[in-house]
Image 1 (cartoon, rainbow, N blue to C red):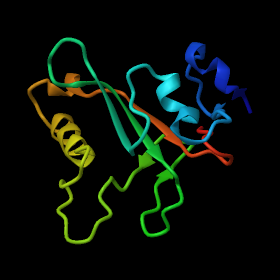
Image 2 (cartoon, rainbow, N blue to C red):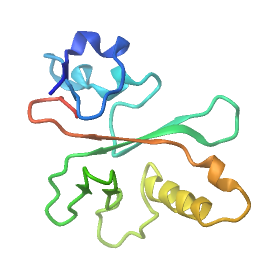
Image 3 (cartoon, helix red, strand yellow):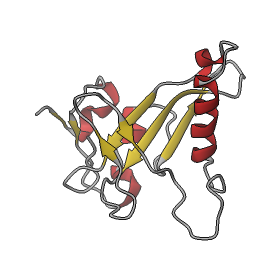
Length: 140
């Protein structure tokens, strides 16, 4: 398995199944994804990086999962590449779309674009999936 050290993140390519190592400092200074992907936030399950064309659409979306929610078991089928993600609302009493980062709303938009006949499928951004690594701030 390939492992990329923290100090090499900013110049690293994205490689499937690679472990990107977190830093040694306490707190978010050791967080990986925002170092690996410019303009990406350093927390949250959904992390949108917006296009520069003022379209209001994401250039890409990072989905981050701990893969450890027993009641909401996210799952990646490594053979097909299909990722089952339960979204970012785990608070009882809230609607599925009532979340701070509006991630479930983004999934709803993607679903609408997939099922549209007007060519809006072109507006679907790539989704990059990262899961929590075994040690500290590591991600895979």
